[in-house]
Length: 379
Image (cartoon, rainbow, N blue to C red):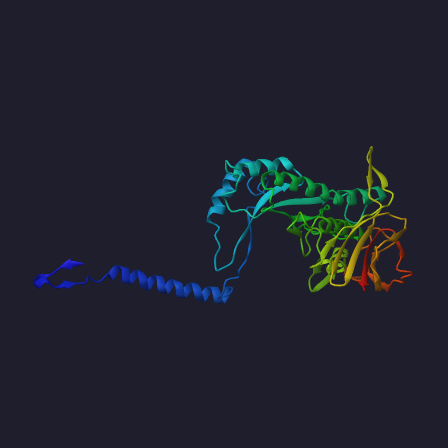
């Protein structure tokens, strides 16, 4: 504003600002058009965000303290947009390394032990690796070795949650295992960099042991994600051109669907352990393992018999609950390396049959090398 003769005041036209306004409007229209053409005019409302990935390695080769400093900086500016509350996930350790978690949390905690920076979860990665020359070539000891490694994820859950409880006893920060699975040597004839690998009955049992562990520790985990979905590592589908097949791991996820949305039920498994050796080291693996959940009037029990060649007969005690109807679905094969191919995409499939109930008791034979789902419709 400026004074003019006669005491009148005249508003100065902001020519530059007007031009800037027109430019901004033009750019906004351009942006809106591009979003509609290449995505969505509405926000995608993605809630879960990892603040970095594998910061201990390919994500920066940080030590926990340096990553903690970076986390605080980036988490400060990751705000809730478009009405979507963001769930920010910090990078946890590679496998079970409690010291990484302790040092990271110590770095980002304030002097009074509180977390003034936005953090909602901490994600560990756990690959149980391989055993034997390839995904489809292994002996009985290597069969057990991989399943033993898969069962090791339980120790990770116990120890990681214990360290987190030192800093966060109210468990406001959730524990995630946002990458897990087997990791075999690349399949011959495939591009090693693409990490394409076959998937056998052994992988199916590794997946079942892992999922049952998650169910038994539902109070300690907020999320778990297998890696990957298609073709890479422990995939659920394999593709080749216009062909696609479902892997044994896919069928385990399918069998375990009734657990989703249910309430975890305490289960106790009592069976002699399996003793085996890796080199000169003697090890042992649980003879039976599994989990249970209840949803409405349906009780689902999933059981893994990891014995390479021995069926196990077990008594199932459901307490005082009476059962209207029961069914069994089993994934198993005499060939420990059984898998599906594009020539035989249904070579390994679950089979289902009704279960007879006698005096509300049940003695069931779990086949060797099997994943079994039992569903009980309760009165």
